[in-house]
Length: 365
Image (cartoon, rainbow, N blue to C red; front, side):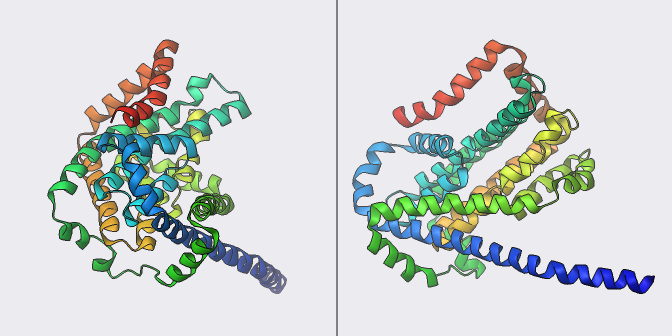
C-alpha cells in the first residue's frame, strides 16, 4: 500500500516536471521582454532627445506641471510603472532634468490608485453587491493613503534632491551597490531603434513594456490567492505586520495591482475593514517602487537609480512616522474616507477634483 502511494507520488512529480519547466521558461521570456522593452525605451528616447529637448519644456514648464504630467499620464495608461519608466527614460536621454523626472515619478504614484478604483468598479459590475460607492471603497482608501504619504514625501524629496550634491545622490545608485546595468542590451536596442526610427521605436517600446507587465500579472494568476489570504491576512491585526506584508507582497510580485487586487473581494465583502487594511496599503505604497528601481537599474543611470532610492527612503520615513503616530493618522484617513463616501454630493465633488487636478497642474504649473 505504501509502495503504491510512493509510486503515485513519484509519477505525479514526474508529470509536473514538464509543466514546471514550461512555467520557468515562460517566466524567463517575460523577464527578457521586460528588460528589452526598458532598454528599447531608453534607446528611443535618446534618439528622440533633440526633438524632446525643444518641445518638452513647453509642456513641462515647472515642477508642478511635472507632477501633473506623471499623474495624468497614469490615468491615461492605467499603469504608474509605465509612466515612471518614461520619466526615467526621458531623464536618461537628457530631455528632462533630474528634478522633473523625480516629480513625474511622484505624479505616477499619485495616479496609481486609479487602477484599484477601476478594479472595484469591475467587481461591482460583476457581482452587484452594495452600491458603487461601497465597491470603490478600497480604491478610495488606497487613494487617500497614497496621497497622504506621497504628497509630503514628494515635497521633502524634492527639497533634498535640490540641496544634496549629485555625488551623494549617485552614491545611492547602481554603481555604489555593485549591481549590473545590463549594458549587453544597449547595442541590440540601439540597432532596433535605428531600424524602426525613433518615433516608431518609442511606441513599440511602450507597447512591449505594457505587454510585459500584463504577462507578468497573468503569471501571478497561478498564485494561490485564496491560500495566500487564508494563511496571511488573518495576521493584519498588528499594524507593523500588516505594513510588512503589504511591502513584501508588492516588492516580491512587483505588482501593486496584485497585492491590492488580492484584497479587493475581502474588503468589498466586509471581511477586512479599513483599520486592518490601511497599514497594508501603506506598505504596498512603498513596495510599488521596486519595479521602478529595476527600471532605473536596467537603464543604467546612476543618478536616476539614486533618485528612486531617495524617493523610497523618504516614503519609508514618512510611513514610519505615520505608523508611530497611527491613531491620529488613522483618524485622518477615516475622516477623509467617510467624507467622500458619506454623501453622493461629496463623492461627485471628489471624483471631479481627482479628474481635474492633474490637468490643472499640467496646464498652470
